[in-house]
Image: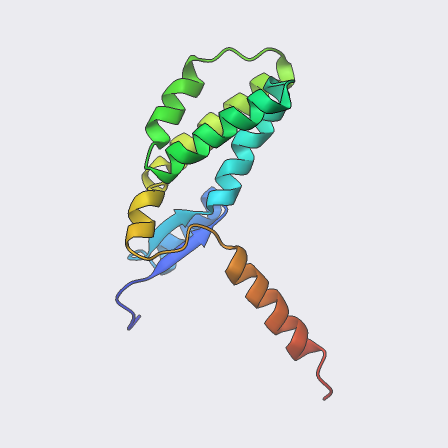
Length: 138
């Protein structure tokens, strides 16, 4: 409680944000950038057969995300028509995820304040520290 600036980086699951609100309501909540991109990538893999077009589209969306353009992405995705059932489900999922987390997906603003965009460094450190501690004798 004595820290002024608290940041929570998570995968974007609603239950995590609910817990954060319960215990650290003053913390900045940031959805892990790479989880957000993975949602787009899952949709793109089903929608684009051409890997070059898929990569170009994903690169454009990543740049938009990095520049606080989540609303633009939601608007573009909302106007799309999926080419099949699996693609439609992935499209619905990514739109829902982005809408639910749009207020938290201000990555440019976070980076300008010195915050991380992803939880990988933290997850890796936890894994390594716990592994080292658990493998000690005694």
